[in-house]
Image (tube, rainbow, N blue to C red; front, side):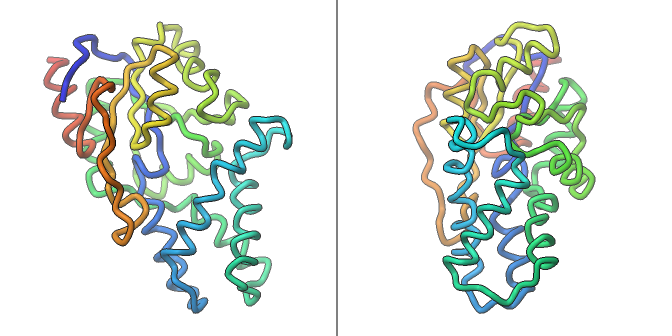
Length: 238
């Protein structure tokens, strides 16, 4: 679906869930640990702590804290909740780094590569810089630039993150597009004047917990994957 005739100069991508399949990546690593728990439930419980942890930083309750450190705080709590006591400190550290090894969705690399031929593509993720760079190397993600909330010292959906992209490239906000699988992220970007593209990822939370298609009529683009987005935008860029 195409609504906006102004092509973006920069396409900024949310990463967790939009570009990479965090759920399957974490679930598969948990299976290899043989912890005797449902890996799908554990993965979703870990992710559930994501927004509350960032809210503590955004409210000032915690000082600026990188996502790696927030993930570890969340992991320690979920291990307690699941009554897992068998992991050593080294095993916990290694498990926490699973977020650096998240696997791209099947359409991601080809879709990003096509878009990169016509547009500048960057991350705009709450993940920290080392996490995102390791993930890019691991998954062959062809970013032109890696931008993180860490650069702006603000977590999405703070306006400083979205407007920061435009400021860095010295362009107007409406020349930046945010591509994401999350409507709250897109709505916040839209309020800052960015173009928006919704990417439907029905199995972000696993095959057992499919996401329903939300109302996306108010976004500029709505597609099922990055190949579809690349087809629309690259064709328009000719």
